[in-house]
Image 1: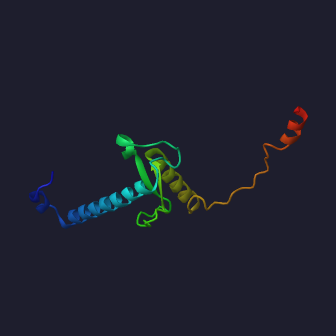
Image 2 (image 1 turned 90 degrees about the vertical axis):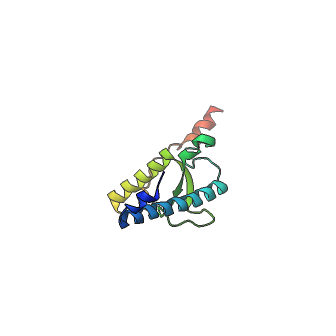
Image 3 (image 1 turned 180 degrees about the vertical axis):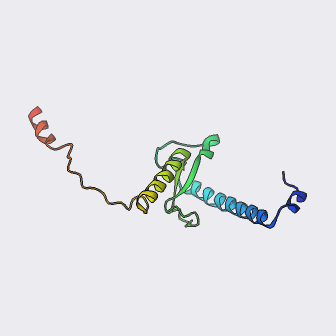
Length: 127
């Protein structure tokens, strides 16, 4: 509960921080509600379904990590559970600190292992 008396005692910096937080919360409510209209309430990574009370554990993740990039079609969003969202940001931070780039930009090493090589011959002999 906030009173006007408490607001009077705040310094200008505190008021600016409070205004910024309120603006961020309002912006989040907007794109969160929009994302819930566009996408099923399922984590895009682990596939866990959300409804009712546990819906608060489903977050809107910005694919490009830019929270100001909120296109109306939702193309920069994906719904992730808290655990997958934390994991995604940890991976992004690790890649950023290790290579100076974002995940997905690193070169993919060529693989020489072919796990199913010769399987067709084994299946022919089994008949």
